[in-house]
Amino acid sequence: MFRLLFWVAVIAAAVWLWRRFNRSAAPSAKPDEDQPAPMVRCAQCGVHVPRDKALPQEQLWYCSQAHLERGQPQQ
Image (cartoon, rainbow, N blue to C red):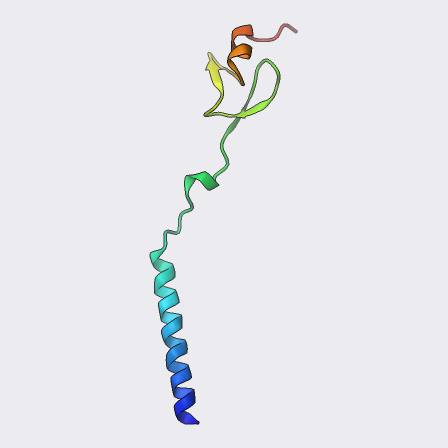
């Protein structure tokens, strides 16, 4: 009975050590894809678009080339 408990303890310790060292080797920082993209508002229609897909003009952002060509809406 003692031998069985001894081997169970050895195997459990080995698994615990393996998981501990294996987890620390993995990168702790998540990839950039998991981070939300900053959004900007289209000056023409008000739709929110990811900043990397929006079209800037001066200090305004537009969701498409057509809205960029129209410019700021007349209010």
